[in-house]
Image 1: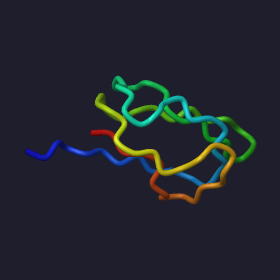
Image 2 (image 1 turned 135 degrees about the horizontal axis):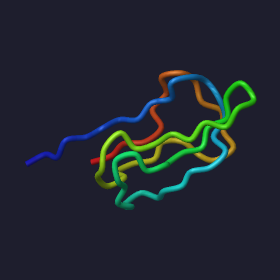
Image 3 (image 1 turned 45 degrees about the vertical axis):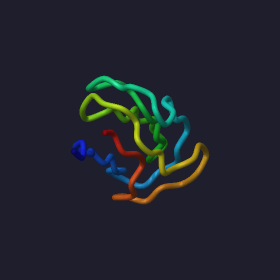
Image 4 (image 1 turned 45 degrees about the horizontal axis):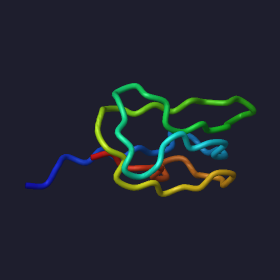
Length: 74
């Protein structure tokens, strides 16, 4: 009965500039969900699959490390 969970992780260290979704939001495959600044460039991170945002594990204006979990989609 458990739904498949997809974990989004940061590919590189940076700073969260914006979180475009909230927990419980439905997202489509390829939909922008987080804006991450890294190496003085803004990188729009997109949902790797459609589903519902189950948990957001970062906050706006905080730094993240490479490999850090950003959010999960169910």
